Image 1 (cartoon, one colour):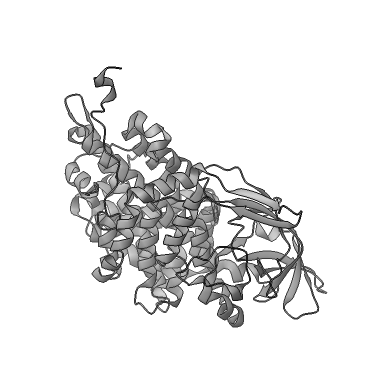
Image 2 (cartoon, rainbow, N blue to C red):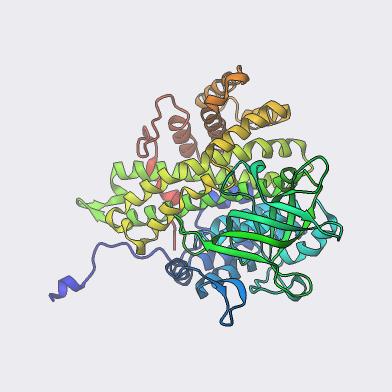
Length: 548
């Protein structure tokens, strides 16, 4: 073979050796805005490790070697264990060690949820699948607080920074992970249609579960929050929340049958399963009949992680695209110097920064639970952001992949995994319709949430006429609440975009805010990336390109 054919020229080097936290200006500015520079410094080591070649390799290996289900051991005993590749455990150990699970709920720091959100955002760029058990563990704690005794038993383990896998009793572990099981095959998001039964036992507060759960991720976690219909009541069944431990206090395995692992779109590192209960021991969490109300705080926390996860996917794809065009040449010059490519990458950067700003703003609201405005804003902005940011992600990542051309279409680039993963967060914890309708529910039942939205976007009033017009147009849509259901998606999208516009107008560089308002809030916007009308596009590109 000719020596020239063995040499490689005009290829971008792998994006490794950079700090995923400090090289992301939009992220660090949001952290300083809502917390402090000390929090950025605290996340520096996480950012360094997330940007290593080792982390990138483990992320690839965890998806190449899929989890395997072993229903029985070699002697025929039912064990229902799932084994993972060592790279999965490498990622989990570090994610837990960096305090990304339930650590904030026990932390004395003044901004624990902003710190955790920024860390989750950055670390998830190593590999998205292992974020699922970490996210559910984070989200379980506020739901567990419905019962002080149960919360005291589990919270210290869930908040631990020590990863301790294996099927053992809670008392024999130094760290634990939580999961959840709500959906069933006949109901899906309509959890009130659940058919699983919870039959009371002779011990107060304990039941046996009987039924089937259609989708339960991370079946090797130590405990699960599950919805089931409490039976044996004179007034009939009542949907109730339960804690299901993987192992009972006496060390025996709870009867929790893993029927199969799902062959799903997206990551292959995480195990998503179907479960069957037949005499599974469960402890009631909260009152009978208040299952949805009990678990709703877990839903809210996982929705936040859906927004963070999608924003993380966006940022990872943007980093790969901006890095590639900075090093690849075509038609007589570097791609980054071509005006049209600058337009595309700048547009992607604007989308990513808007998602990052909104996600960190929501995390800041969690850090201020006693503030009425923050609580009301969190109530309305979570479904808004969940709807909008997660919906935008697949289109954004597809365009980022195209920046790499054929190089982005092969698995080694990492972009195909990001693209397959991109629809997930728009489905998990409620699809687009579910979240858009939740926005309407909040607006009609909780008038303080509209006031919170108006005050938040109003903080930028008078700075940009396009934002002002968009806010006015959005408020005009609310004139006929009775007829809004058919237009709920339009309303949710406009309200979310106005929130993003307000944040960028107040805090982002003028060129970023101007590009966002001119495109996303303009009347002629068609959703196509790379159609910005002008401005300092190169400054936006340079702001977002990783620096080793």
